[in-house]
Amino acid sequence: MIDVDGLTVRYGGGGPGAEGDPDSGVVAVDDVSLSLPDGEFVAIAGANGSGKTTLVRTFNGLVDPDEGAVAVNGTPVADDALAARTAVGMVFQDPRDQIVSATVGGDVAFGPENLGLDRAEIDRRVDAALDAVNMRGRGDDRIASLSGGERERVAIAGALAMEPDHLVLDEPFTGLDEPARRSVVARLRDLRADGVGVVVVTHDLRDVLALADRVVGLADGRVAVDAPPERAVADLPGLDVRVPAAFEAGQDPSPGRTEPP
Ligand SMILES: Nc1ncnc2c1ncn2[C@@H]1O[C@H](COP(=O)(O)OP(=O)(O)OP(=O)(O)O)[C@@H](O)[C@H]1O
Image (cartoon, rainbow, N blue to C red; front, side, top):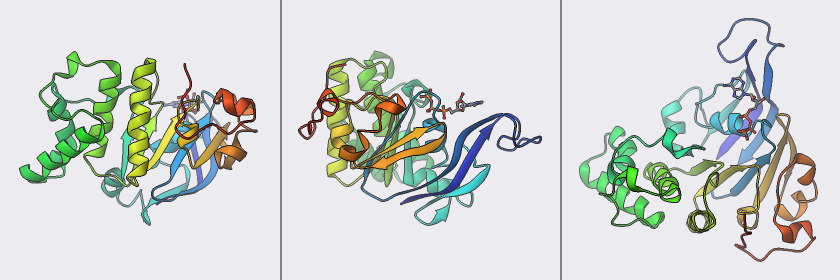
């Protein structure tokens, strides 16, 4: 469970850790309160600059609140960042930001190795994570030889190897072609079925709306929409968010439906 309570984050001026006038600078997240239960698939949607990335980076302590607090499984992130990073896996917008090893297996093993787990447990987690992203047996492949979609899936596997309660993906479809998008969507559908809480940050809901239990729409750092997809969709175009054509036409899309880019 991720609990966000009265969260405000500013950059510049009186931003995190900075001295100065707290009213100057950019208010990236503005008094947001949210609860994300375990096992829920949540799409966090909004236009560029609406505060999506800043919000989710507070879930595991990558960004500190200026006001308010975030707790994961009841423990404030500020008190135990390691617990938050274990419980909330983060897949960054550009997988190159988090790939640390030359090989697929080495990369996926990196997190569990840092937890100090024994070799057998590390190997078990790496195998399970590669299975989950449909890359079983690819551990010796060199990262440099992978496609963009495969790199995204390795980044997801690296986060899954920490066995998180929630997996947060920031714009996971950026730069992927249609087959790669479909492959990532299929993996997210499987994770949802396995009970992993999934949070997808996006300005384009076409790939994930049919999977989402809930859509949180941000505008100017505030929650403008928080509802199941069927109800949220009417307000989303006002947030400059793309939705599937079936929703635009007022129909219910079939489960798991994806749209061409
Ligand atoms: N490191 C930073 N320093 C200063 N301002 C920042 C920083 N990061 C984000 N901002 C500003 O904070 C606001 C929210 O940005 P954020 O990246 O959280 O939004 P976003 O919805 O994820 O946008 P995008 O889709 O473009 O990534 C924007 O005005 C942005 O310019």
